[in-house]
Length: 165
Figure 1 (cartoon, one colour):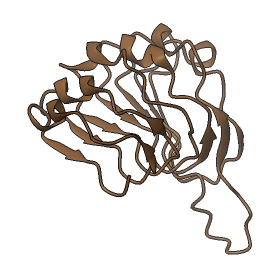
Figure 2 (tube, rainbow, N blue to C red):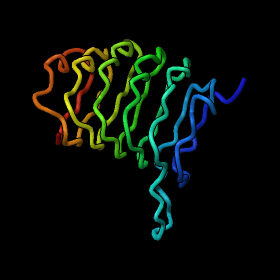
Figure 3 (cartoon, rainbow, N blue to C red):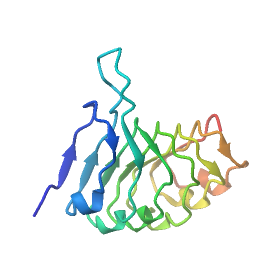
């Protein structure tokens, strides 16, 4: 059947992200976070690079995707909104420069953590993030968001962090 859980956080990996849907078609949990944590102070490891691969919606059972604290660039794939079981989406502490996709509404009843903080995201913050019931939503320290944030963000989420934008 294949690998269901793949946790290799804090292992000083470097290079491009793998083609996740093709490499791990039955994946439920993927944690490749904190690849910059090398104990060697002389290390120039910048962690994993490249962009988040398209085709994530093919990982129908994916519940956790944590790619935080790397050097991932590019866009947040719009097809993450098509993952019905996604509970954690964390791409914080990277160098992503896109906008937050508007088609995330399908995540409203599954998502618990949505963290895109400390990137270089821009544009408007989609009001659909306010429909994430009981979720912790983090979009802080991006610097490129257009203000004001939609008022719908204040109603259903359990926590919303918009500091330093």
